[in-house]
Length: 142
Image (cartoon, rainbow, N blue to C red; front, side, top):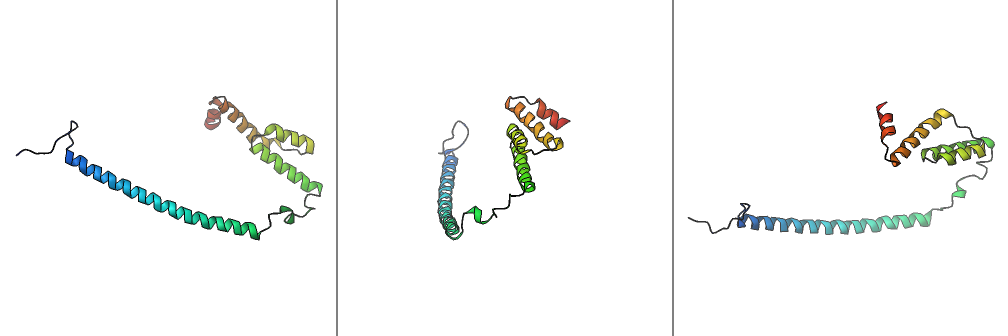
């Protein structure tokens, strides 16, 4: 009894290929249907979210000055706190020279123990930009 099915050079029979191709076609069909369903749901949800955003814009005043009292930054102590906060933010963002300039102009004194981690991090980042891993490895290992 000889089989009428041909066998490919890789040893796979034509019947196996037919079943495999049918399975793949069904999988592709299922994927297309799922993608269409998800796209439809996304469209519905996006419309709702957009409506909520528009309702918020209509019902709330975007003017910030109504929230903050005009006298909030009047005292020198509060101005100092604001300057310190801005300087710390600049250090965190790696803008060391800008932070130092602001310190000089505003008279803010930042303790070296607070500055040191940011100086170290900036030194490591600069070395990484130059493709030098040594400072980063030294920091991690020691």
